[in-house]
Length: 450
Image 1 (tube, rainbow, N blue to C red):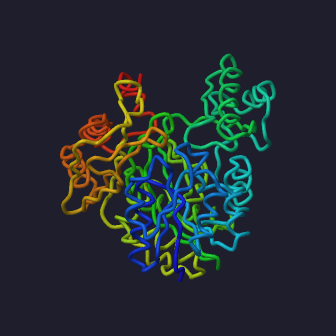
Image 2: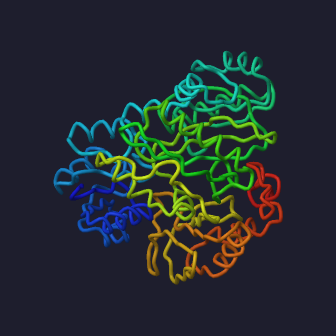
Image 3: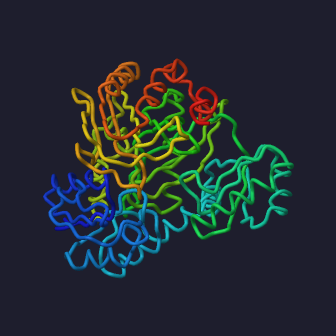
């Protein structure tokens, strides 16, 4: 087993990984920017090393400085968490070259699955259903328009290297295609230094269903059930739950088997997520594969009883999966709400600042993943998510009632958050009925996202 792991991340995921290391008897090394010198992860880790200034490019995205910190601290492995360098093939390769284990899949897999077009082609070869669309890269609007007419409007224009909702636009007709294509491509160039685009049929008001998988280097792959991530704003997830109210036992088993087949097709190793769109006729289509731990991994942990961070570590250490598919049991229901320091009334503008008072909920079946505390200064440089409220109940109704209660208890003074907005969603009759699609926010909360 590893003796020491460096966490190349910050915030609640860094704290989450440190705790897993502590429980396994592994020493942890935190890295931090100058803006995070008093952050919780620097206090909890066994060692903490400053790697640069506040801007991510000078710290959490600086591969050389992170690797230098790993070498200086004699770390055996690096856990990238999510975001930052977690899906960076070059960083994974650099870790290997420095004889440091990258806790995640290999660089070739990250590269293949990170390119949306190549991922689609891989899945088509494996007979995994994909949304109808282009098989070749698209670099200009004129060629894209011709292909879009063949596919049939509406279409989704996507950056091949995109993620987090960047480089994505919906085109409803030939008249608005060129403008949407150029805007999406510009976002891709600015965000990912890549002008490669692809086009696929737009599935209207689908459910966003993702399956958590674990895979070791010996070819063993298991599905740990699904998460419903349909509540999202501008393609950014807000609430996740497991299991999904949209799936019955038969469809769940079928989609889980397809997710396993997808992971095998990618020669996957580590924890990963296979994401699908589920249309109103219960047809499902591969969307993408996330080659890292997900923000919402906690809901899967609640319903399976597994620790996914520990499983990642075991797999990276060369161990075989400790569970088989027949051992996986989904019990009860879990829901997660992301709490962000942002103002829904001002177009969700980030609201960094000092937390003057903090009270977080507790009790049976309530989990809070966070790195904030009273007196903590939320920096303006990073993602606005400051906490994840995760609840567990014997069934969906119990979990919903528990989440409503938990959100009502949270008190964060000093900064504006989306707490009330999340409470409104959780108590909305359409969401409570389990009928919300990806169009839910746009349809029912139009005034709040304008």
